[in-house]
Length: 494
Image (cartoon, rainbow, N blue to C red; front, side, top):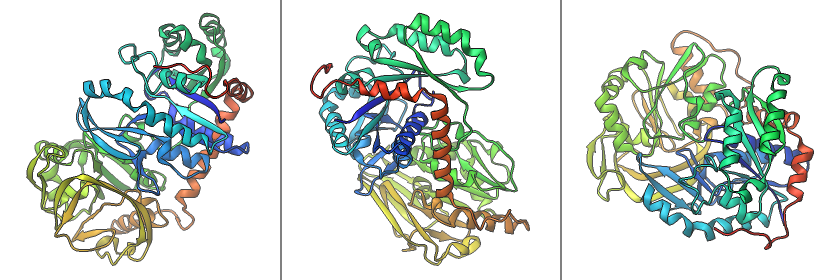
């Protein structure tokens, strides 16, 4: 039987995903096979496994930290919001359908067998399973039939680390309030509290920690400092979407209301001299060196949004002098038309931006596959991409017809498009794009011959693991896991 530890949070974005990845890396360094697990994930950043199954991108990142290949069992239920009240429901890597929030709330209990099956598949392989919760276990309106926080902890008999975010303020109220709202059996599962994202002198916290332990009756397992890491976040609340440093090369990424897989551009953030801005208005657009239209979970709706706020017209005007690159949904928007005969999104037909050839027809069957090869003859400002190896994955609901068979990248003049997520991560692709943009301005970036994004990420995982190891009482964490009951006993039922 695998040992288990679960990371829950006082609210969203307290750092559960990153701490889960850090624990996976630590256990790997300690000689164990550690696998991540999140029973239900709500995110627009997703990943395609080797066998063509779709899971949350955060679990793929955690698997990478653990040194294993991502598997569908790591995230059996994925919710991809299509509106403010509805989501596409993906179970075991395949689309189950679209549901509004009320319908899904009633339906989710039926997913328990799928969740437990996935968990048991991981148990066949893992020494340790690191489980990530979602949101907060103290959302009293959502606790009925819970399948992702304390409900799941009871099903698999998991000890819990409860994480609060001190960077936002009120961490003592967060942790104590969460504990006080838990049922007695749930509170017993919380074996340690973690204060995350701390800045400053650790000793200043000591009086508060003593009072926290006295009132909460749970030990503080560690205080984790604020980490300046650039690992992948799972949703559009990510601070990665905030405009940051200056750079000689300026990339403007359109921040769609339903932006997906913005992790595609994290590699550019690591190239010295390149600035990545996420923009949502004409005023913010300015005069970038490259405009990127990212993926979207609602291609028609996000194109309408651009048309209404003037960004479409502004981009079309820039396209004569400034290169434009569309990925997945962004690629579809750049074409001549988008039709939705089966009401996959909003139904009907819509004129595209007309900057690339091709007509996209949305279909209920989703394309999910990993792809690799070499980029064919590209031409234009990014001619240097020709012949470079690429790999990534496709995940889209539409088929683009009447477009030239250009391999990984379609091009017309200054405009480029691809269906391949992750294409920029491989080898020299991102560097080649950045250097071409700098050269166009008569500038040069620093020597990038040794730039290796994948090696850089491995260094980030090691830094994360060292910081978490130095900050948590890891001996206590191992003891928490050793207390798990024998399989099949002591299980709570929803």
